Length: 468
Image (cartoon, rainbow, N blue to C red; front, side):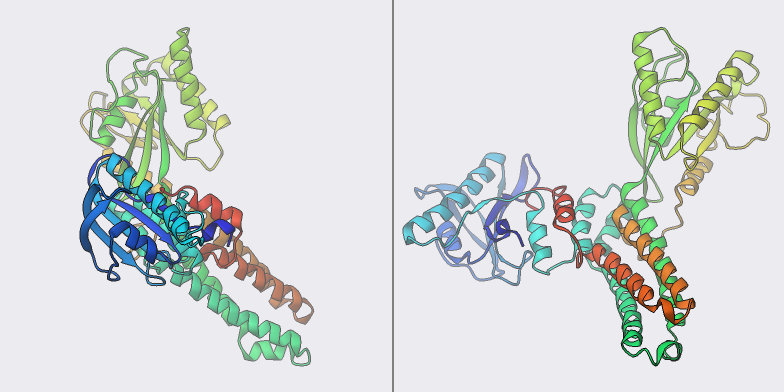
């Protein structure tokens, strides 16, 4: 722990702005004197008490509920005091200031520093202390932020399962199996006269195969969890008047983008997050791609290419009513070449053939034929988007995950692959086998925070809300 982790901390724990109820939260060691100073009395643990909250002069700030959670039976593992008041910003700021003032008064009145350095909490510091005091592991702490940020019901339920420890239990099962295998290898190194026979009797190879199979299953579900958390960025691209804005509106089910027959109507990106089977898709409508002398339109086209280059998938929209227009088709070919040059090979480009409601019997072709105006073909497009995203029908019990979790699991897989190679290469590689298993265990422990750096912790918790 760093020195600052010993400071008592306070913060407004509810969202900024007006609300029916607001909460000021305090956490630290030995808050009993602070409780008495703020509430004018002692509080029964874990029991809501309705009382006035007064300022230094005894004048009422508000009336509300006070709850006291003595350590270690609290969210942070320290003493925690919560003041539930009316949710006006001024009221909550007055209560927060009173908490800090009362702590200073306690130190002055007693002549002893009983509450050193009470301060306003940093973002995520309450959750960080819960992690540091072994109330939750790192994956569960991250799930708190993911639950708050969830943009779909499926993502929220999955984050709740991670917060309950479902994902962590999977990691612990992998870790325990890996530790057991490490124990066998280390014992073999300690008793070299036994060597391979000892490992064969314990079926080390079978244990390693089983471990890799379990890891593969967890990795697949973690990929799905990342997709639920982060979604994918989908950019709609194409020439002017192909129906890009109409397609965005159709997918979103709302009139988000202006639609007119005038070429170049869209000058800047329009973005909307939609969900398909609970997977968030960040869909971006961009300016039509063409040669232009209009300075404003040129800026919009440049921004369109910037969005395209960072997309996870591109919808290349074609106008079926202009498929016999030579100039239009030449421009299509130029855009296709530029997409091929600018995009990484793993980024899919889906051809979308629009205006099927007015075109003459569109021929069979790759991609999706649809009408953004009537909605024909939209369901096929939604299924295609889920397919290119790598989404599989969400099994019950899926948990939320982050990209760092997937990367850690991939490193574990690499170490186990090397371990399998060393195990099959007979006794002279047993020390290398032991090292690969150790590195694999460390990578697993990074997920739950048993083996991690202060820099990583700082990066994770700094993205939390203040008061969480």
